[in-house]
Length: 127
Image (cartoon, rainbow, N blue to C red; front, top):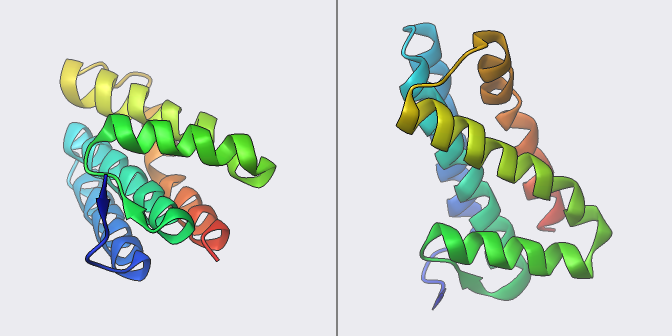
């Protein structure tokens, strides 16, 4: 991890930008790209939460994952994000984007759309 040279607000803005891109890709029927953008939005929102709480911005996904688990161990409210984070990592990033296993589409689309709730919850927990 590195000491942040940007604000948590900027990282949350990036998360929302990626989420908007995910919705655009979804509307174009590019489910794999939409899934990856939604995963990126999830990771960035988690990075924003971590930065707000610790003063450090994770550089890589394993650091983000580890820091999220540490925060969840100290704050039960953060625990609500853990399953949702790993669901997006596994289904959107791993299965759909990398492997092309996006079926059932309704489930994948739901996860993409619900990323907005994840971002909002992470941002609320950052304050």
